[in-house]
Length: 333
Image (tube, rainbow, N blue to C red; front, top):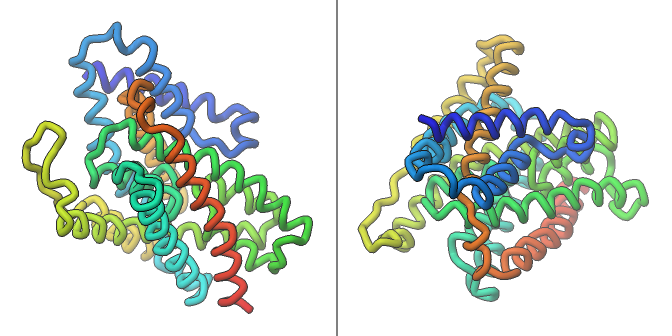
């Protein structure tokens, strides 16, 4: 119980800090600040607290996280699919699937990177940044430091893209209409916050399509987790834990509930005010989970990893820039 209280304290602090204009202008969400505060705790004062606190922290990275992923469905409706049409849906699907497949191949075959870090980094780049990393972690059941590494790559390259895309568009290097630029941003930027930041800097027409396409990518999180679970089961990737005991991969029911919530939200049964309140609560729950993740992350675990995750993330970043542009130019020409 005390561990949960500590997580809540740092989560509230992260939420307050995120309201500063400096962080708002950079579109840095409470989730990112939360994991940084958590890592600061893990590598400074954690040693002064009893290990019994870890139970509460673990509760936040598992149960609270899954609740947050389920409630994330209130940000979406199936009507979003109609707003960008078949071409927009196909763009999102092609980007998500190709980015993950290429990331997995490059990470495991070429860079010889740890399989779990590869999957987490690829999922974060392909789908929805930190939220995708957290959701994927709950399927992989990997050590917290691996998720922290993946999240850090999402933050770095997503932030770079948030400033780079508008700059290239204004220079005329990205030869796209406002509507198609929005689709490009939504299909290739990492975090929802990054998409909002880049889209709003270019106007309403760009921003609206950017957010819709990004939400379609987010919607693909649930089927991705289910397919990942089945694939891991068949390849026996998680047949044993680090301690040698047998473990089982189960269908992530929180992902199924995520789809159910999206369906419920599509009927527009709740008022906008209630949905906004749920979304605020959901953001807080995800910040709790991210903060707790940071609190389980020690710098000692990073030493043997090296720069390979950065190499992988940079390759995926370049892939998203060029592949996204080619796909959109072809489908919307």
